[in-house]
Amino acid sequence: SLPSVLGNSEDNSKSVAVENCAGINWDELGFNPVPTDFMYVMKCAKGEKFSEGSLIPYGNIEISPFAVILNYGQGIFEGLKAYRTEDGCILLFRPEENAQRMKIGADRLCMPSPSIDQFVAAVKQTVLANKRWVPPPGKGSLYIRPLLMGTGASLNLSPAPEYTLLIYCSPVTNYHKGSLNLKVESKFYRAISGTGGTGGIKSVTNYAPVYAASIEAKASGFSDVLFLDSATGKNIEEVSACNVFVVKGNAICTPATNGAILPGITRKSIIEIALDMGYQVTERAISVEEMLDADEVFCTGTAVVVNSVSSVTYKETRTEYKTGPETLSQKLRKTLVGIQTGCIEDTKGWTVRI
Ligand code: COI
Image 1 (cartoon, rainbow, N blue to C red):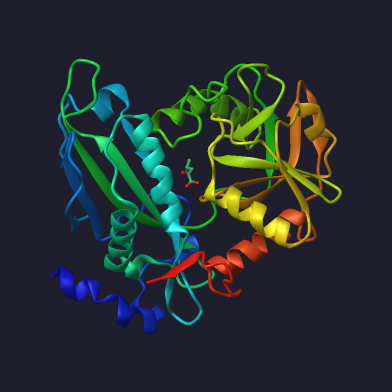
Image 2 (cartoon, rainbow, N blue to C red):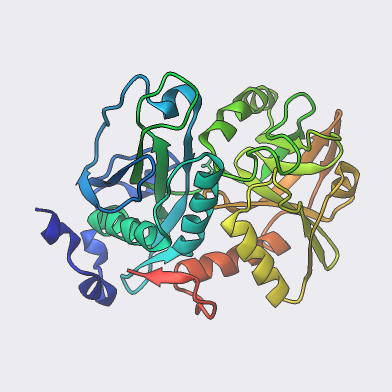
């Protein structure tokens, strides 16, 4: 029954033995969906508030063909990770930030959203119900995917009459294999520039439009694409699934969140860690030329964590950057992952022990 699977949070904070892990080969994890035991579901009608949700066995869902998410894209998602610590606890990283971002996205798409407390409590329950799927230390993490969608039916273009928050998860390791060889994309854009679009929220509609550019780049041997701003085509914005940073000497820059850039939680955390380390960090517009002149380029994201960019190709010219363990990006990555996994003391209150 569910209660015995869940236990209570006090018991869990003491110790979760690694032997409690699922019997899978942790060395073969990638970034693919692995079915786990439970998922969380909470529903609410248009104009009402989310009130009560529950865990149900993980599995397919039933949905109206007229559901607004399927037809008109009324949906947003989040991504966060749970890590197992050396002493057998489970840590979440800044889940209230995801809750806050979901709220902003929901407002933009005219959806009700769970409160911060409801969101965090639901994420905790989902992780505890699936705790045997949290990989042992050093083997990866449990990636948690909260999805808020208009599940009610509508044929006319109006907000759905019913909403569903689903939270499901999968054990994962690194999103990318090795550092990135990026191509600057000149045909397609990820988001429209400025504050009027949806580039700054995790709308489901922001993701599939990346495929055309990304598939073409991968067919030419690149790891992925780097998108430019749609207004001028001069400034860098994001890689398909992550934010981007450039380093020159002691100065670190990342595109400002101007409405088109996703305000990444890893992005925000890396800015703070870099400032603490004494680097100068600026959020502003960055031209392609400035990036090509940088010492180092790196990407951040929940799935990606922090990854070095080894080269950027712009109009047939390839520029190479520093990679390897001595780079600033790897130093930042080590600190971030150290905090996330409980190996480095969390002086900022970022981690939530469950
Ligand atoms: C994440 O990093 O959590 C994301 O949502 C990006 C996704 C494309 C994997």
